[in-house]
Amino acid sequence: MIDLRLLREDPDLVRASQTARGDDPHLVDQVLDADARRRSAVTEFETLRAEQKSLGKLVAKAQGDEKHALLTRGKHLAEQVKALQSDAEAAEAAATELSRKISNIVEEGVPVGGEDDYVVLKHVGERPAFDFPVRDHLELGEGLAAIDTERGAKVSGARFYYLTGIGARLELALLNAAVDKAMSAGFTPVITPTLVKPEVMAGTGFLGAHADEVYHLPADDLYLVGTSEVALAGFHQGEILDLSAGPKRYAGWSACYRREAGSYGKDTRGIIRVHQFHKVEAFSWTTVEDAADEHRRILGWEEEMLALAELPYRVIDTAAGDLGSSAARKFDCEAWLPSQERYLELTSTSNCTTFQARRLGVRERTADGSTRAVATLNGTLATTRWLVALLENHQQADGSVRVPEGLRPYLGGLEVLEPVR
Image 1 (cartoon, rainbow, N blue to C red):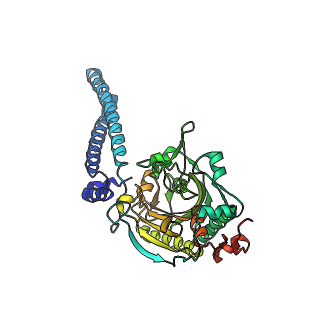
Image 2: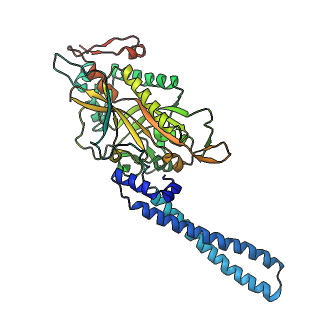
């Protein structure tokens, strides 16, 4: 949720952020108007409520006609107070609803524009050069008896799959390597719930413009998460955190579910864009002052995982118009995909500043004893999609796949994945 004090003090900053995102800047004025009505209603209610309390003391001392007049006045005041309380609550609800439509303030330096206006920050690693026909990940996976999309579709429909044999082992190797990486950086591993309440899903900002991407179970009024970020954000809901020793860091391992609404016909072959996958997600709670540095640290850990997998990649600074509503800035790491000769997003890390924490009521105690909202950050350390880049970049002429050295300890020392004869 947007900081209303910032909105009142610097509405032009918020308007500029809305414009950069391609959102409606006039929403700022609507929120300011609703907030003014809310404050006016609350002030009027509190004034009459104070008068009502004072009148009660006078009634206790009065007698005769004076007491009767005071009681009549008290009855009238009670009706007014009740009506004003209702008005104040309605104004509060309207202001809150409108303010939730404003996305997080874009961080200074974020590229302007939409999906194609990102800025490439760097390239790392050499793209592989093959002297044989390149196979895509599905052909390789089927040859290794590692991926089965036909049976996945038979059992669950399009965009579902089975990982079998070495495919299952390879995914577990990646995820376990990610957990080890996270733990070495001070993260606590967490197996998270994959069903969450509406207030938690809304609190993380996933029920806004992209709500149609989320699976909802109406009978239980619960949502299936598309990332363990959601459950980790809800972990400290309504709490006051002690950040005096540094950020609180969690690495969430969970199944993830996405409807992929609006992506009809896009990346339908193989396991690039699917409805269900596994992921290890880094999540940090930290101070506002430390948030930008923690963002860079998470990006660094993501890059260390890509180095472990020996994947050529680039890092991009996502443009404002392509940010999710919660993110103030987002860096993506995209691995080279030989079969399509393009880059494919494997990791994403976002600085959500205080946006999610305000919605979820998570604060920290400051040195002077007061409280304030904390910052939240998230980033992908490994996910099922990595198998796509791993298989394609490390493929060999006979359909076998070389195992990167960093993953071999997680596969019992296996150096090459051999096709099934």
